[in-house]
Length: 164
Image (cartoon, rainbow, N blue to C red; front, side, top):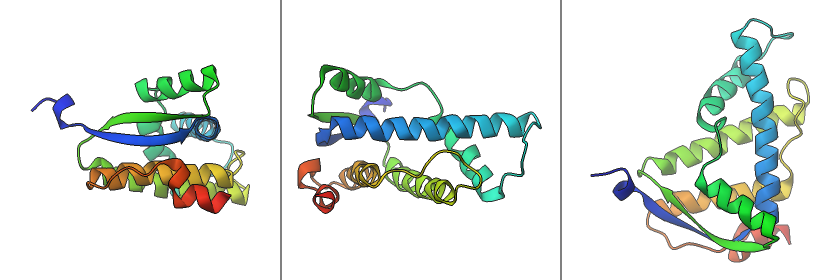
């Protein structure tokens, strides 16, 4: 079985492009700070002690999400550049282990947000409420669609309704 044939198509319907862009920008800011922490720690140049739990977050997230954006991110960026308000976005996700990985990612980012809120070890601000709602919808769609559920458009989601 090829990698492409083991992918599951996840449909992110009515994806809110401006909110997705802001959410991605915030995540990239957090990842840049994590890269700096990881680099300083690796080279022994850390100016302050990094708590073990935060260092674990850094060491987990940087290798997975500190890389160059993929095709899905480019499609979202193109939609943003065109000024689209929303798009139907499709991702090839797989294998089934991606569902638990998506849940773990959400948990890791929630943990990072807790450090951001404390303002002691990170400069990045905690994720804004609307971006948290978007992240939970996005990752929730990956998780539930991999389990066989039908896609729920952003506009029909509990997360979007709770913002309004």
